[in-house]
Image 1 (tube, rainbow, N blue to C red):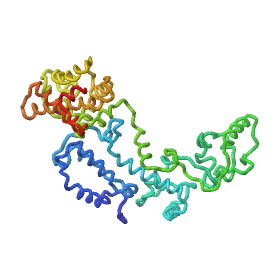
Image 2 (image 1 turned 90 degrees about the vertical axis):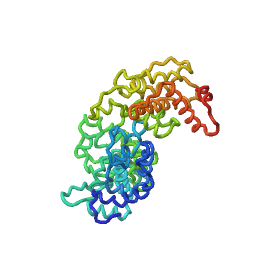
Image 3 (image 1 turned 60 degrees about the vertical axis):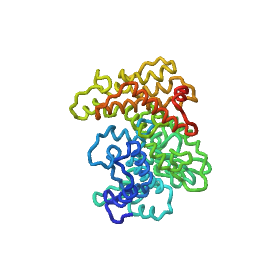
Image 4 (image 1 turned 180 degrees about the vertical axis):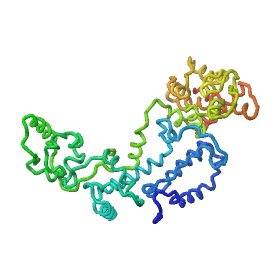
Length: 441
């Protein structure tokens, strides 16, 4: 752990970066597929030192996924904000390091609130003074670099997802803290709050074995009595004090303990909209990881067809390399091209399915899953779109970059052989033939 370094300096991470580079030196990342790089990224991120991440901001980077270690720049196919979302919500599940660092920093606040005997807590409390029984005052000094300032700035987020678990009542303020299931008393009954003396009182100050002891500033008016009665009915659900110290209860966990992973997921889902995204069809299919990554890129309409290359500023004459009849958007190449239709018909005719091709790849994956196959055959059925699209993409690239054109019968055979190979990987105990695969579909 560096001593005396600026808390926001990237140089703090140099030693960690050097260790990671040494471990990864044997990997030839320029030869890894994007699926392989994704696996490597998640492995490295899981091994990062969490203690440092909880204190110092980590330098972000995204080039490795798209271009490996190559100096030549590559297109970034999908916005990084989407990449960092979970696979269930359309991303790649790469950890958002800013949110991870934030969740780790928030745990310091939870520890500060619940561990009165820790030496570091006493030092922080003495330096920045106490705001209440849970936290210090906000750091507002205009000079110097304060690590606690950045951690303390997250208190409102910790507080909004916590409540006080009342034991002896000495830490929990009756009006200011959230201890009742309905919420903060000051917010629920602002009119009563303005009538009360000793507004900073703790629950222990106001509670006795006989009940609550509130002191009003003045005599109540007739129209205020009904409101006070409503207030008393609410707080009279309190069952009394217990031995032990009040604790800050994290509402994101059944046991009230702050968990970094659960906090991360909570923050990660705030801006995510759960949509009908075919994540199981992409990531749960037993196909090579690089093909899963490719299918994900297709579902995002981000594969570098000529249309997408033109959108990135390149001047091209966009045409479909397979049919030559129209431009080359993703959905045309993989769904609506008459050349690609020949491959779809192989499997649809075997099942006797009348199929209207959906508009988009993501919709096609969902519809394919619901095509009515038996549960025992679903594993093989699910990998068919990946085999079709991989064969189509290989043929398209052969025509684009090598000027080698195969007839549709050759591509059909390549697709079926690819499917047989994957099925043999899927069912490694038995050797699967072409006839076995076609009979089981």
